[in-house]
Structure formats: structure tokens, C-alpha cells
Amino acid sequence: MQKFSDLGLAPAIAKALEKAGYDTPTPVQGEAVPAAIAGRDLLVSAQTGSGKTAAFLLPVLHTLLRQQGERTQKEAQEWDKLVADAQAKGEPLPKRPRRKDPTNPRNFKAAVPGALVLCPTRELAQQVAHDAIDLVRHIKGLRIAHVVGGMPYQMQIARLQNANLVVATPGRLLDLERSGQIKLDQVQFLVVDEADRMLDLGFADDLAEIHRLTEQRHQTLMFS
Ligand code: AMP
Image (tube, rainbow, N blue to C red; front, side, top):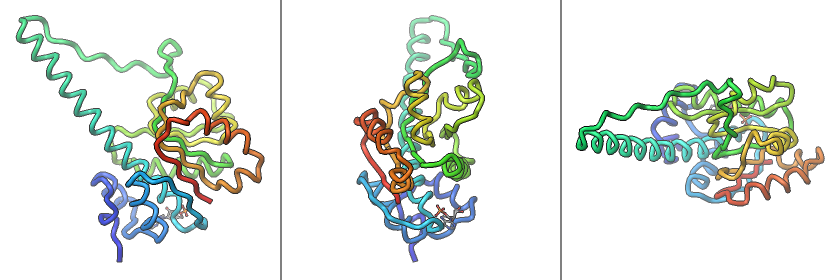
């Protein structure tokens, strides 16, 4: 039988799976995860209950985590160099910048997520975000946000800031994009969950717009 460790997932993700009580991949995970990690676009047809949510979340979180690790390493090297340069010149050592309070409107910065998951309904978006949060619970540095109607404005901004993966319904996402709260030009992974239902619910134009706004992306994963 296939094991999660056979799928090429980062050790932190494999550990998170263990903690979440998943021991073996479901068939859709066994097929989709390695293909997505290898960078392929996917069109997957799978039933609810087949483990399809983790089938797209795992490879996306895996790659975001790998990139995060590379970024952190680079930043640490740059910081060490700044300190070494200051020491060599006999100058005062640099101070690390303080994290700014994201709920203060003066500190507003648009969210620039690396991954976007689109869901046809608010309930599904909440469920997917919940699964993603569960998977990254013990992983440092990956932030998940979900965008649904009805959330207070300040809370929404605070939650979106620094989000690596955003789960959203198309209409709400485009509202936020148009009002400048989120920028989609850093999105590398676009996941469309329940793509068929999305079209049934009349989201074709919104999807076309999101496709255009994320044209620089590396991968598209469509699930239905
Ligand atoms: P989904 O098809 O994504 O709606 O998943 C159905 C349920 O199966 C969810 O509650 C998941 O938490 C659970 N699940 C997904 N993958 C696995 C797995 N490999 N082992 C055990 N449970 C899983």
C-alpha cells in the first residue's frame, strides 16, 4: 500500500498528516499529489468524501513551504551579512524591524497570496479553509485566510495580510481585488474546486476574470 512518505511531501507536512490522523493516501491523493508536486496542471474528477480537498491542498502547501524555507534561509544569510558588515566597520549593529499591528489601518498592505483556492459556495470555502488550517496547524510560517461575505472589514484585512493561501468564492474575491485589498499577481497556484458547480452557479465570467488576473501562475488544478 502507498504511504504519504512515498508521495514526496515535505517532512513537516508528513508530520502534520500523522497528527491529523491520516495514515495512508486515498487513491485520488496517491495520483494527484505526486503529479502536482512535479508541476503538472491537473483536471481531476473525484467525489466528495474521496479525500479530494487534501489532494489539492497537500501539493500546494508542500511547495509554498519549500519556497518559504528558501526565502527564510536567504533572509537569514542577508541578515548575517548586514551584521558582519556592521561589525567589520565598527558601526552599531542593525536592529530588526518590529512587526506592525495588521489591524491598524495605517499599516495596511494589500495581501499577495502565492496560492488561491476558489470554491462555489461560502460553506465549501469555510470547509476547505478549515481543512487547510488543520494541515498547517503545527507548521510555522504558513498562513491561510478565507474570504467570505459578512466578515467585519478590519478583521478581513487583518486576516488577509501575510496570507500565503487564500480560499475564496469568486465574487467576493473580485470585490476585494477591485478595492485593492488583495493583489493576484503573485499567485502561482490556482485551484478551482467543484469547477462544474461553479459554472452551474453562473460564475463563468468571474472565473474568466480571475484567470486573466492570475495569468502569470505556474499551475492550475481543476477539481470536479
Ligand atoms: P473530502 O473528499 O476532501 O471532502 O474529504 C473527506 C474526509 O476525509 C475529510 O473529512 C478528510 O478530513 C478525510 N480525509 C482526507 N484524506 C484522508 C486520508 N488520507 N486518510 C484519512 N482521512 C482522510
